[in-house]
Length: 129
Image (cartoon, rainbow, N blue to C red):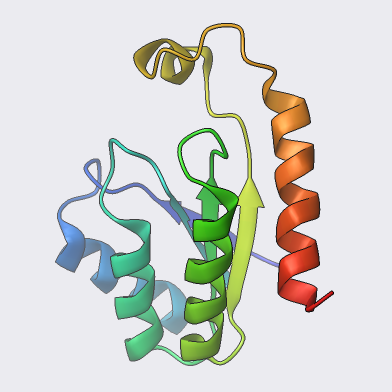
């Protein structure tokens, strides 16, 4: 069985506290440590990179909303973190909530087709095709 946890910056403390929790997660046997790449949270990249520096096994999962970040940035950042962490970066794409759409003024955008398009672009770019 595989276990993971999601650390939400802001709810659990500052960035240093999130890093402490990520390191502790590896020590107690978690397989994944997930972060939301969210405009209202701490930087997932800074936190995941800090945890990668202090750990050796735990996989670092980053959840994206493709309407808040360009797929080229996801590709660049994920490839860099994956290289730095020794192949431990995992990407997740999702929708978040209707409230996020309202906050960002996205209204009637077609989110699921956008996610599908991003998955294809990211997979193609990271596979070297």
